[in-house]
Every structure is written in C-alpha cells, then in structure tokens.
Amino acid sequence: MLDVAKIRRDFPILSKLVYGKPLVYLDNAATSQKPSSVIQALVDYYEGYNANVHRGVHALSMESTQRYEEAREKVVRFIGAPDSENLIFVRNTTEGINLVASTWAAANIGPGDEILLTEMEHHSNLVPWQRLAKDKDARLRFIPVTDEGTLDLSNLDALLNHRTKLVSMTHMSNVLGTINPVKDIAQKAHAVGALILIDAAQSVPHMPVNVTDLGCDFLAFSSHKMLGPTGIGGLYVSSPVLEQMEPFLSGGEMVQEVTFDSATWNDLPMRFEAGTPNIAGTIGLGAAVDYLESLGMDQVREHETQLTGYALDALKELSEDFNFYGPADLSIRGGIISFYSPDVHPHDLGTLLDQEGIAIRAGHHCAMPLTRDKLGVAATARASFYIYNTEEEVDLLVSTLKKALRYFSKTPTGTTRSG
Image 1 (cartoon, rainbow, N blue to C red):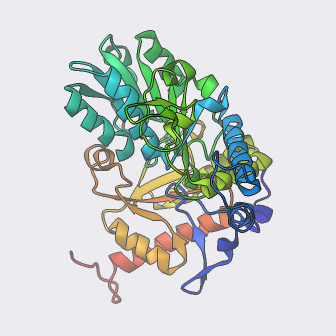
Image 2 (cartoon, helix red, strand yellow):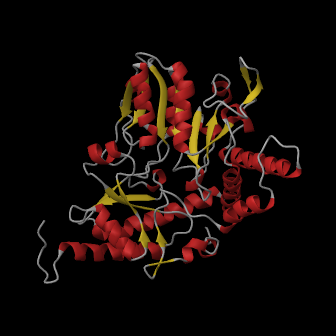
Image 3 (cartoon, rainbow, N blue to C red):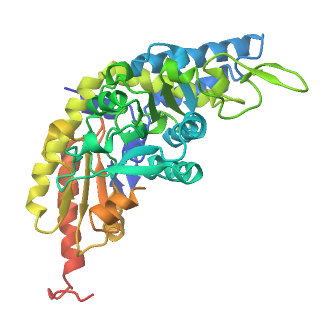
C-alpha cells in the first residue's frame, strides 16, 4: 500500500489553507497537483540548460535535447509502446484526438463510412468526430450506456460492421468512473477491419496501461492529469498506421529538406512535432513518470480502489438525498464519484464545499450528452481521488455534504424552503 502521509509531503500545495481551512483537493479528474520533483525539473531546465532542441551544436542545446528525448523514452516505457517513434508529443488529449481526425481519419473515412463512439464520451472525443462526419458525409454510431453506468455491449456485433472504419472510446469515464473493456473491443474492431482510438486521459494516470497489450491503434493522454505540467501530452500511434499518416502541422523541425518548390518530411516522430515544442513541459512529464513509477501503478490503482470503496460506503447514508452515478463493481471503476441532489444545485454545492476548503468539480464535465440525455440532469457534482487523498478527507466531504443539505433544505426556523 502507498504511504500516503509521506506522499503528501511531496506536494507543496497540500499545505495551503483555503478560507482558513486545510485544502482538501478532490478535483483530480480535472487536473492533478504536482510533486516537488516535477516543479524542480521545470526550474532546473530554465535555470540550468534552457535552449532549443534538435537544432544547436552548443552545450545547452545538446543537454536540452538529451533531456527532452530521455523524457520521451520514459513515457514510451511507461505506456508500453514498442519504440520511441510511436510517441508523438502533443499539448493534451484533445490535440491528440484532433491530430488523428485531421490526418488518418480525414484520409481514410469517406461517405457512408461509420465511426463508433460511446454515449459516455468527453466532448474532446465527440466534437472532432461530429465535424469529420459532417465534412465526409460519414455516420456516427454509439454504444449505449446502461442504468448501472456501464456500456451495453449486447448489440456490439451489429454496431461493428464492414462500414465501421474507426472505434473511438474512453478508457475510463470522467463522469461515471467506468473502466471500459477496451482490449476486447479492440479485438472485435480489428476483426471487421476497423481501427481503435483510446482516450486514456483518465486511465494512464491511475492504473497500469500498456498499449501493446491493449492492441490499440491510437492512444491519447495528458500530462497535467498525471502529476505533470499543463500543455503537454502524448499520442501513441501503432507503426503500421503511423507510416501511412501525413503530417498534422507544417513548418520548422518537421522537415528534412526544403526548396522553394517543395519539402520532404523528417523522420518519425518529429514529422508530427512542428515548431519549438514544450521542452520544459516534456521534461516535467518525464519527472512525473519517474514519480509514478517509483510508487508503482499497481499500488496507485489499489489505493484509489480502496479509497473509492470507502467513499461509496460512507456516502450510502446520503442515498436518500443524492443520486450517485457509476458502477458498483470496484474492479471496473476508477476514483471518480459524481452525484446530484434535486434540492441543491451542483454549483451551490461546490461553492459551499469550497468555503470549507474542499475542491470538487460541478457542471456537465464536458460530457453534456451523457449528463443531460442519459443521466437526466443538467449538471452533477464530482469528487475525484488520487494518490494523496485520504479516508479523513472523505469523511470531511461526507460531513460537509450533510451540512450543505441542512443549509439548503431548511430555513433558520426549521421550516422547509420554497423554490
């Protein structure tokens, strides 16, 4: 098990007071906090060897390039990719998905073709495909979500057919916490000649992920959700697919030779990394990988599973006041709990919790079709856990939710509020 007390000492922000109360940070699905080692990696870059990469012959540039490519190797190892050329650095999961939509998908999806998604997708894995389908006269189809918050795969064989060119789906839902069987679906997709893209923004930070084992063609994730800096992420692309793809952006660094009339492309993966990259962020991501590997991703997953189970048990006494969403089976659930009360708007709930130092998320979580059309609510409140969260923080969340219910449902005289 993780030594959470020791881990918490590595995160300077966790000593912060919010309105005079100790910070309880439960918004990890939106972004995670950063350990001192990651922060120091950024400082070391800017203070010690700040220079552009791949271009200079002076000492600073060579050190910067070495550290940058070392970070790539760390991430490649972390996600189980076969080679460094399979990892393209992007700004975030969203850019990774858009890169696939603008390159491989734009070249391979045409009129009458189908893209299979799920009803629990983040907007980042929905809107790009809406635009592509409109441009290409293709069709979007969706795997339904059950009342239990899992995918209804009973009709998968009909949804996957000879017209399916791509399956694009989340590995872990950012609303429900559901961990989807992406490996099995990848096998079925390949059986009909389709490729599969995995949105791993919520899974790579929280559980062991191996792209080779999953058998995916694309996998996108973000640094800032896995203890790393913002503005950097990764896109894995399998070699047979990558070799067919044309560049996403053009300009400096992604070229091999340029004349006034034409250009040839650089080696992989640099042909997809035009311009000066986020060097400091990439090095910081490498430091985040170092930190997570020192803990062990199996232990990270075990801690979050135990904490989520503790939280779900503790929240049962509020089941008459709140609807809680997501599967009951902890083996297919991550550390995310979304909930809704008809008596308290999620934003009011989030504001009251904030006054007690508790940071949660309130809204549709960039998954409006799921929250509005499937859950039947405009928004939910969401608590999401990570390596530094504790059972004591869960207890404080529960007691503050009780306080919120008393505050919003009763007047000072004890009569029920109207409206």
